[in-house]
Amino acid sequence: MTGGIAAAALAMLPADSGWAAALEARKSPFSTDEQQTRRADALSYNNFYEFGSGKDDPAANAGSLTTAPWSVEVGGLVAKPTTYALEDILKFVTLEERIYRLRCVEGWSMVIPWIGFPLADLISRVEPLGSAKYITFETLVRPDEMPGQRGLFQPLDWPYREGLRLDEAKHPLTILAVGMYGETLPNQNGAPLRLVVPWKYGFKSIKSIIRIAFVEEQPPTTWQEMASHEYGFYSNVNPEVDHPRWSQATERRIGEGSGLLAKRRPTLMFNGYGDEVASLYAGLDLRAHY
Ligand code: MTE
Image: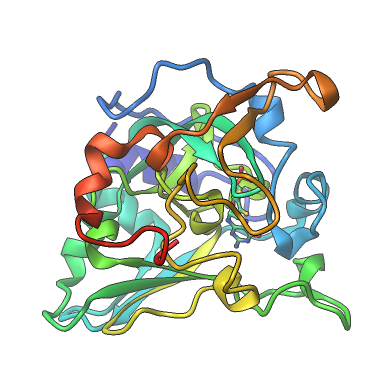
């Protein structure tokens, strides 16, 4: 669909409603034809610590997040730093459906039909300088709407931050998503704009982004700062490098049984996207750079 129609669809949304608007998107050759996770599961089993650390907390609490108006500041080492209203971004991108596997570092996985556009399309607009080697992302801090950010004991150091190498960010598989299952993103899944990097553990796919910056040095990221021996900057899905506390060799696909009956499937190197992305890491020791 054209960006103009997408922008109109998003602009129609009441500011703080949990309403979803239909989004049209063209099909992509990058989509998998694997069985999709049930929408109800993808919308109710979430990680979004700003709304609590339980899997059902985001669905219960994220309705309070105001997602319109929404703007994203894009700056740092670029020739054209710009603060974009979300609807203006949607005017120059073409939305695509990307049905991707999502593998969480915790050992579960889903198959989600995202709707979004290549991050590269936004990157080229701001013209990164030659010195820009990495890109950073930040989620908003809004304790009055995010109960997980209130109180004395905070599970994470806010804002939630993520980062990619610039070549990873420009890779055609890397998208900014504005929708899933044919509609705008539900708040618990990172409305109105989130990153999706399908060959990396899910925590790299930062939700509800308000700031993007281009930098020269590898940036600090939330989970790496929290426990660097457990979570690395790269966090590529890798069945051969275990988490210190559990194996990463297999995964439980949500919807394929639970408890003792849960079927486990082998985890694939780069979450099955090796043909597309392995060359990004030629010569890099993936055990040292987990
Ligand atoms: N982004 C923010 N801002 N806060 C978070 O807690 N959790 C991450 C990631 N993005 C998280 C986040 C983790 S651990 C995962 S697995 C995915 O979001 C989950 O995305 P989903 O709930 O849409 O499946």
